[in-house]
Structures are given as C-alpha cells and as structure tokens.
Amino acid sequence: MNGKVWLVGAGPGDPELLTLKAVKALNQADVVMIDDLVNPAVLEHSPTARVVRVGKRGGCRSTPQEFIHRLMLRYARQGKCVVRLKGGDPCIFGRGGEEAEWLAERGIESELVNGITAGLAGATNCGVPLTLRGISRGVTLVTAHTQDDSSLNWGALAQSGTTLVVYMGVAKLADIREGLLAGGMTGAMPVAMIENASLPQQRECRSTLARMQADARAFELKSPAILVIGEVAAAEAILPMAQSA
Ligand code: SAH
Image 1 (cartoon, rainbow, N blue to C red):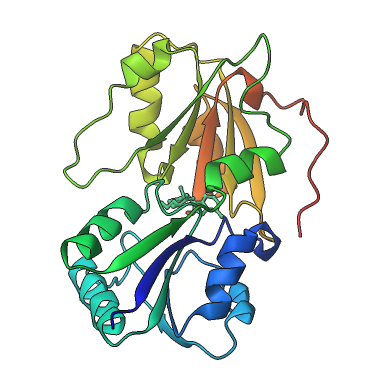
Image 2: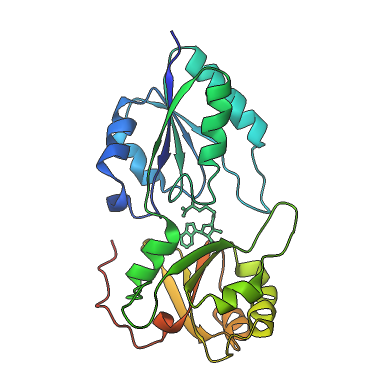
C-alpha cells in the first residue's frame, strides 16, 4: 500500500510557531524531507525519522525540483509516511500546491498543513500590524523574484492602497523602489526590512521607499528578509513588541 505525503509548513523559524498539526505529522513521519529555510530544531518532534535535506536556496547549490518529486514518490510507494517540511506556509511561494498536484497525478495521497508565513511573522514580531483600521485596509503578498524574470505591475500595487509584503526582495530593491515611485507611491512611504524574522538573530531596519536601498546597504541586509511597505511600517511601532524566542 502507498504511504502518504504531508506537505507541512514549519513556520518562519521560531520552533514555537509550529502548529499542533505540524507537530502531529512530524511525530508520525518515517521520513522528513527538509528545506533549508526550516529551523532544524523542529526535528525534535521526529526523533526516529530519516531526515533528508533538500535545500533550494536561491543562488546557492540546490536540489532540483524534479529530484525532490521523485524522492517523495519513491518513499510514498514504499508505504512510508513522508513529511515534506517547508519554511513558512507551504502554499505561499512554497510550491505546495504544485507538489500536491504532481503526487495526485501519480495516485499518491497528500495533505497540506498550514504554517505561519514569514511575512506575517516578521511584521508582527516588529510590532507592525499589517492591517489597521483607518490606515491599512488590506495586505498584498508578492515575490520580487520570478522564474522567468517577468516584472510585477508595481504601478498597480502602488495604487492599491494595501500594505505590501515583499518576499525575495533583497536583490531587487532598486527595481521595487523605481517601480513603486513610478506608480505614484511617495518616497516618504515607510518601509520595514526584516531579516531572519522570529529567530534570535532577527534584525530590522526601518526606512522609507526613497531611502531603502541605501539604508539596506548600510545595514548589510541579507536574505532571508521580507519588506513591509506601507503606512503601518512607520518607525513608531503601534503594537507592543512580540517576545521573540
Ligand atoms: N513559504 C515561505 C516563503 C518561501 S520563499 C513562507 O511562507 O514564509 C523564501 C523567502 O521567504 C525568502 O527569500 C524571504 O523573503 C522569506 N523568508 C523566509 N523565511 C524568512 C525569515 N525567517 N525572515 C524573513 N524572511 C523570510
């Protein structure tokens, strides 16, 4: 009999931000396939599972997606309970849907388990409420990095009036700034750049749209980081700082 694949979000880094459902899946796992943005501390919930690292960091040595697919399939066909552990949420820039579909086409059952996505965790950990009555009526999650290098409609995003949360933006600050300014966003728009959200080494840099590139350079902002662009990212934090682990 075939096993099952759990496509599980491990959250942004802080192991206490795992869901109970993720812990349950980890407890049952025979094999855990772990991405490199996942904090290995969460493996304490899978003490006996075989652990396979399948990192795919942009720009670094990576495991081809096809290989990951085949490996999941092989273990599932051996009847194993496989946990595919991804950073944040499996369906936010995480290929969760893609992998579920690929498995379904081959008759393998899978289940997606939500995780807390980095953008939400990073903002909250810095006291930035992504929505705020009278200030921000919505949030847009976007990635600055695309496989085909196509560009986002930054003009439409600038006009949307929502808080923008940008993933994979560290190497694209110039494009983001130019696009939003050209779209009519003011250079004074507050920006929060949050590196290693929810981890003990979390750092945050408050800036504005006009200055963010220079400030990020001076700050030596590194990936993984998210950008929060909108009035709610103003330096005077509105929420009390969350206690990071
Ligand atoms: N599925 C993940 C996103 C994967 S894409 C999620 O839901 O969070 C990888 C990008 O996520 C990184 O380039 C960075 O922009 C962001 N990211 C992931 N973990 C992060 C962290 N701890 N702090 C800040 N950004 C993070």
